[in-house]
Picture (tube, rainbow, N blue to C red):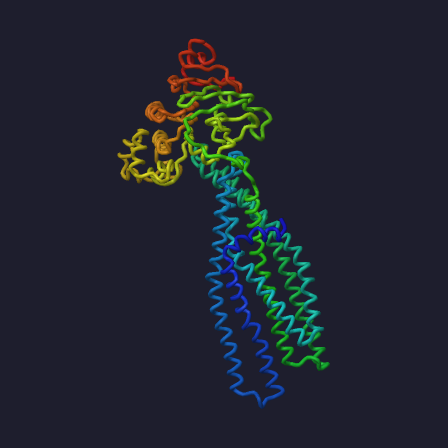
Length: 584
């Protein structure tokens, strides 16, 4: 993206703090006042000393000194504002951009997360926006101050000698032309660096999250090699960046020397001709020195500028991504939900697949039905359940909840009425109470305890030292599998949804834990439309109806008794030990 496009993306964030920005720029102007006035003061004092020594009095010296001191005092106050409030403006802009990016990521669909590494996203939310504070604060200041000095210096220097001034200012665009080539190289290297740090973060996250697997296979050396490979790649990209920055610096220093050389030659020439006085030359050199100082500051800011622009570009790339699961314009709220669900001629395949997972699929579920779905892996069981809350959208056909197409229901409203429990329970790092209350944030302590009681979790919670305030650790590592499942059940009890989806919720548990959790799930299912996906057939024999899927379609359906009487596919699976095997 071009710089102008990126600047347009960040302007709305500046507008929120325009009052601070305006005052900050006014302060920036004041900070240049003392620096720009000093050469004029010295020029006047020198001219008086050379040409009117009788007028050179201490009264004049003190008046000029007071003027400079007053300007310096204003500069100190203005600098304090810029360093404090100005920097906070930059920090607030960074905060706002990070908030907007995080909120946008919350809207992205499952397919986006299937294709994107979490470590890369973490890098974009954190590292990519670190430099926005300095960029947002210094960019307006540096260019505003630079503009003032260039214009003011040109006016003063032209008054001294227009020929010398035109020569000096002719060198500036030439310098910018050559420096811009290195600028572009720095920009490309900076972006590559940001991409690589995301990959590095992802590698670290993956390795540390799987540390038990790493240790169990004694593959620490392998992981170290993978890390060192990415780390070395990061160094090589840094090398490219610093090489470009070195070239940029040399170019600016070259033209810096050419300007002083031009002043030395042309200034001496015009002094010999009597067109420039000694005081004028002193003032001229001071203004050019101030101008070059400004150029150097902009050069030093260039690295920060490129980091900021790269951060904005990476931010824009995320913000420009659109979720494929969004509310329709006329989406409605769900009301009076009883739990009626219909699949009508549904076709579905994943974005990267050519083969359909479901083809012309039809299924009707009445309010309050307890439906079990069984079948071998790959039959489409989990996919079917993921389509109801619109984690994915169907290719064709429709899914109706209460006779309303799910695409015409507001996503939040749809998902508010669905409770989902999966095999891999996710608990947030926090207390047991925090995790149960996640089902309904405004729940009271009494409601949290009642949900735990209904889920069969109350007994083990009360035996913990901190009870409901027990810290569960990252992803609930301090609790057993059965305990985590019961907390997740309590969470759904608290949400109290009319539709319940149980996706192999007990398959990872031992027999004893499974019996406890299964009892809690049966309690949870009462009075709700329940869809259960299970590997263990013994856990679904009490379902109102069992749907048997194979080859991505329904091949049998009926109660446990009816299916056993048919002595078909379900019968074969059940008589092999009640376990659903991965058969074709």
